[in-house]
Amino acid sequence: MRIPASYPMALLAALLALVPVYILITLASDATAVFDSHNLKILGNTLSLMVLTVIGSILIGVPLAFISAYVQLPFKKLWLVLFAAPLAIPSYIGAFTLYAAFGPGGEINQLLGFETPPIYGLTGAAIVMTLYTFPFVMLTTRSSLLSLDASMVNAARTLGMSMPMSVFKVILPRVINGIAAGSLLVALYTLSDFGTPAMMRLDTFTRVIYVEYNAFGLSRAAMLSLQLMVIVGFLLFIESQIKTASERHGRPLMLFPSNGQKLAMLVTFLPVLLLAICLPLAIFTLWLARDGVADFDFSIAWNSAYASGIAAIVAVVVAVPVAHAALSGKVGRIMERVTYFGFGIPGIVMGTALVYGGLQLPLLYQTLALLVIAYVLRFLPLAVGSVRTSTEHLDSSLIKSARVLGASPREAFMRITLPLTLRGIIAGAALVFLESMRELEATLLLGPTGFETLSTYLWRVYEAGYFGRAAIPGLLLVVISACGLAIMLSGEKRSQLEH
Image (cartoon, rainbow, N blue to C red):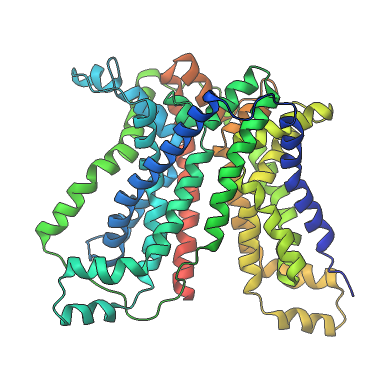
């Protein structure tokens, strides 16, 4: 039996994805206590934040999914972009600006003269996480809603059922998987986020792992990381069992509410958009007008782009054989699924594992190479998914014809496969680049001494209390993240056209 040429590289990528787990298990074996009262408190805080965020995201995301899918609003595409726009702002930026805006002495207090309650702790963290994760629920639910046939609702209405009752008895039961899929994405994001709990002063797994690392408690940090990974692994297993609708089976439902009803819908959700989008942009603009750009070293932006660019190139080089291996057979699919494990490991956990790995390999410790490895292990699945999708749509008869005409496998790949899948490769590289630019946790732990990026600079000025210096890096990260959102929404548009 001939082994596909893509298998060796795919196997190497899969083995590398398992290295952080092996390191954490080795480190955690030295920990003295697995569970104590402090651990239980951390677990309680983490799960409470996750549950509150999921509930909040459902309460906001599901109604917005109905509005964006079914309600005929003026400038409908614009509203969809606005509803999804919070994904373009990293949650730690939202936490930073909300923390700075509210409370005694906050920006709102200074500008308007009245005090607002401070935002911190579990309540503050849940508010921030909800504001920046509800689009996950909205987008997955909206996808399910668009796949439903309007005839079911029309039949229910014909039989005398009111529209609200039709929603609860006919539509919601059929989109529960979409809601669940989005909720699990919210839960995974909440568990892996470090910046928001840290800025809101809430002890969750991610924050305490960072504290333990800074206190040279690598074994305890590893033990906490493994506990967090167990929860993440359980959620990833549940997510893999959920299937959402992907094909349209009929004409979608269309609702035409009165102008008053449309206004009521928009007014209801306007505070969400103001807090999630307008407030951070307004705060950064205020700081920029107040402090200017003189104090910002633009080499920091170059550092971010340089490290992320290298990670993007390496990721697509590795992703191409992994994607081809996944399409060539069951063994290849298994190797591909193993590489996805890195995406499920929170950045703080990946950083903790690779710090120890770097200590064992002095040539890698405190180097840019180790940081790039972390980025690649974390975001390789983004590149693999993009490359695989473009490769699946490739007409295999073209490659077979080239081989029949005497082209070698390498020639067939270079002259046919590569040009036809180039769009997917570029999209995958762009996603890895953008996510690497936003990555905070792994960069904090693995960045070389003196190597500052946009995300770590934001963290440093937050710790030092020099909030005004966050304007330039904050706005740059928002613009970069907006590019990632544009890629995601354009992907949604292409998938709708294909179906």
